[in-house]
Length: 258
Image (cartoon, rainbow, N blue to C red):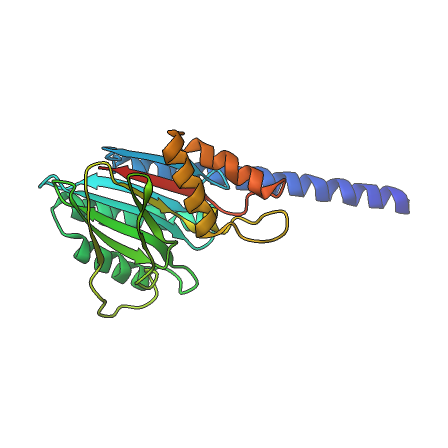
């Protein structure tokens, strides 16, 4: 009788686990549908852009946005909410709506970066924040302004060699509302390439427990440009560097060409 009771209890426990799993999967499916519909209102302006996006889960916490201003300029955001999956992805549509709506109205990036920061400070938990880069290209694509908000260095190549690496100069969005310094500015020439990544790539852990880092990624990118390889080659290199370790974060890399 004791063994029968134990088997029955085990069976009921398994059935309960299956029920909760199925309910969670259904809820995730609904949330994915809501997020996809919300994101569909903000079409991606892909002029002179190629990108690599490898989410850790079915829903990515990384944000990859590009929109065209009425004057012909271009606004780009590559960012990463703390964490990954549904919790991080839920904050994305709100941020994307601010970014794309104000950009379409011709608002300059200074005000957009401030508006996103203020909204996140007001409406998301203090344990969450947005790390990443905001970029503004002039209509002639000859002048670039960059707000690097605690993200990895932004790499700019000219003739296949490093022109600049723009380090973080701003706090993550959603932490503190305060006056900030002007953005970094770069004069571009035709053929220049700008690379922006989230920290999912630079913080990839190797077999020995060391992080990939920006220096190694720059070497990979420089070689990739020299050999005319697609961005997917970076995904192959990252997987080889992990050497069997599981992916621990969303991976995003974006390239802008002149």
